[in-house]
Image 1 (cartoon, rainbow, N blue to C red):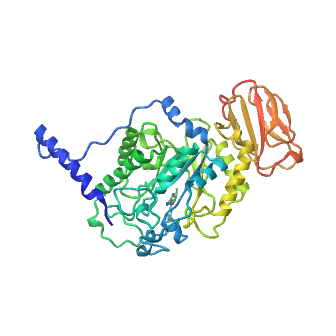
Image 2: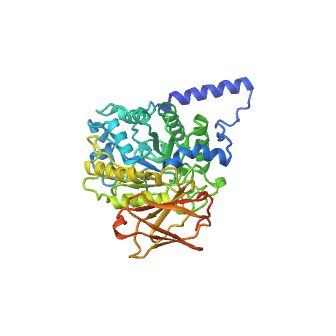
Image 3: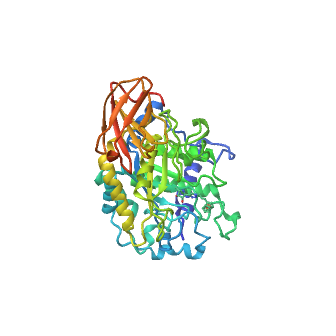
Length: 457
Ligand code: H79
């Protein structure tokens, strides 16, 4: 397998440096390493502007896909475990997902109410799902020979969704990546991690320049050779290539506050937190950006007969994340024939039916002002609070803390009747059993002032 970076780009850089040295008459010991890039300066207001579409979107689709779907094992850790390396690394020769139709994928995501799609452009296994010129181990060298990233990117643009790419720092296939993956016998002494970083930067440049992703979603930052300095350098390089690009926190090294939050900017890198297979936390500060990523089944990559989450679980997760003030990215793992499993398609359509009725209580909202409670969560936008009752407290009414503003009206987005009584210290919502929904009962409360400046209650 060929890795072009070992020759072309490196030679060009070296020649350039030599010319510079000669011209400036620099001493031979001058640093051969290029200086680390610095990100463009940005105020919190400018960041808010850059993050706006993403924050308003609240709901996206994650796609974990690659030749490993032929085996039905996990993309992130079956190489060298359930599937021997020699077998795994040759699966691409049989990868021919002929039934793939980007138009159907994007239409499905749209129907589900998702506003962006994030494709695994390259996962830990090192296989590129895009037409890279820097490695032969890519989609164009499969029997399929079609650029899946290209087709999805184009179709997203056509149908008005944002196209985003996942890119793992880990690359167990590349000869220069360290540490070696499970079961890999190649000696480490031949590897040059610096050279791997050059390759990675080259691929990232290809992605940004040729596919224009709206988000670059990094992963795999926890392995030994990755450092926060390398992360800062790549973050800066990418933001210089595309000032509007949004980049997750896994380009850095630390993910503090569990996975949900962000460490202070001086010790971390990236624009948003990435709690994995869990919801984030309710910080109530309206400046902590995060997105929970979860699977519609159990595995990231497709697995036959994997347990599928119920509609209740899916809606609960979308609503809970929104109520905790976070985004939600729900993952599907397409099958080796190119289709998304019909039962997953059906689930996404069901989610879409709920979103059609209640989407205004999700899009463009922020979590709160009520802190997550036993009964559920709340979201807000302008003068409106949306109360999401996800679990009924027996026959009792839902009792909310006072908000210091007058409630002008109450209405159920999900149909039926609600009685709203506002006292000095509390708001009491009485909903007859006929108006109570299993998925989520959404009560819209209109206030006589902004709901956005009410501190978390
Ligand atoms: O892309 C998805 C995952 O493949 C990736 N992140 C999300 C977005 C991811 N890669 N690794 N991990 C998440 C964590 C891996 C945990 C592991 Fe294990 C510990 C892998 C092997 C040991 C847990 C325990 C899974 C298998 C055994």
